[in-house]
Length: 189
Image (cartoon, rainbow, N blue to C red; front, top):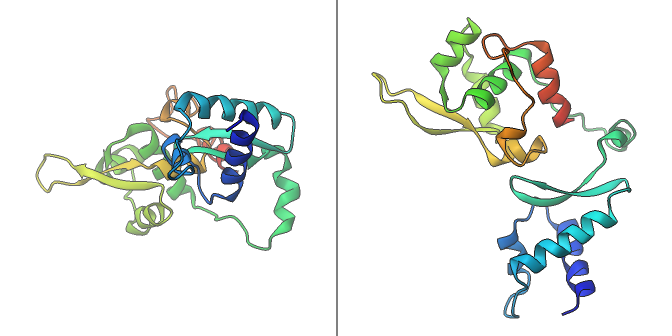
């Protein structure tokens, strides 16, 4: 298989995929054939990324793997293609998500202690249904409250490879502010 063939196969697979594809899934494309090595795949992906660097679409790596995505500068124009509006989330929902993202794993009680108000059950349910948070265990204290953390889907939807790529939160965790929420949501749009 030539480098050109490998690039074309990866390009087609990434365009056809509904979600990011990691190296393991990309190797499965080759079925019974001898799959390319991880190095060969990464090299082909780098070449593809370079080819798409100055276009409306770019190849990016997120937590779930590799995907093509449209340049965020085009979002205002592309929003007119669909009548479906992006989900609108309340300030409480966004503050709760920010608390979980920056302090995970965290209990509902700990979120309430920092925010100073109770966390509505619907807020947690909304974030779980969206696939952005999940229960990762239970704290070893009376009542064994659930510990929440963000998911790979959260990272993918916000265009992040790791949590370390979240905007700096110096001094903001005691009281999440508009600036923090704006930074987090800016990555989501």
